[in-house]
Length: 71
Image 1: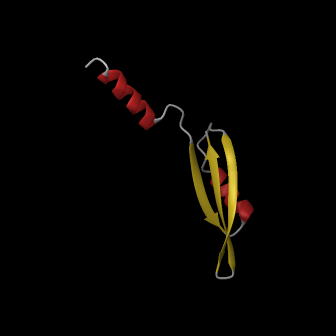
Image 2: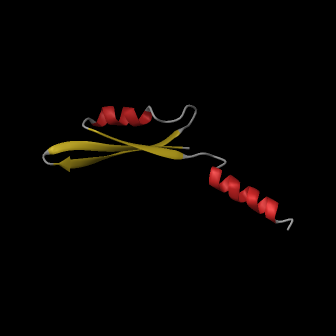
Image 3: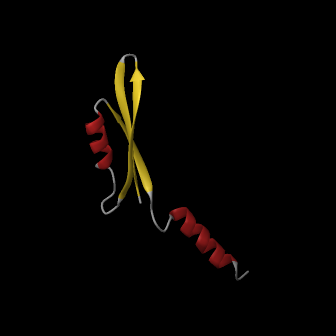
């Protein structure tokens, strides 16, 4: 039974995360504005690791879906 406590602590650490990485996706009609809106949602102090925008055509309208990833 002595292994249960460290195992549970490891599981809790894995679920809650030691280094909290994440991402946010925002959709809009202007690529630059959409990217900036996504960047504004990055938590303070986090380092942005990637920015990607996909172009989406919806009934002759162009929209952008931008994702920002941080570590």
